[in-house]
Image (cartoon, rainbow, N blue to C red):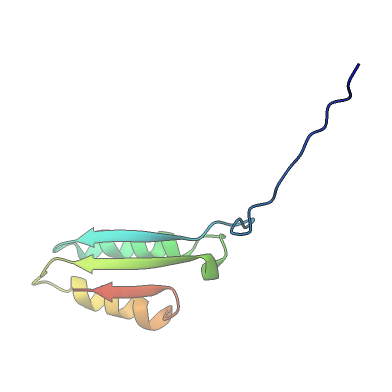
Length: 82
């Protein structure tokens, strides 16, 4: 009987916590973007492993102000895309 050998190889790019982007499209939805940003910034996942991109589609209400508030509060995590 030939003994079996299990070979494992760790990928040099693998990490315990994968990195990803959260893209949030929004148009004229101050309450929705506020709730969404509050939710994604309140995660227990390590903030250096993800980014939040709030993409405003030309809102003409206070949506941009809400996004700006969160990007100032969490500058390394939330960025505004116009």
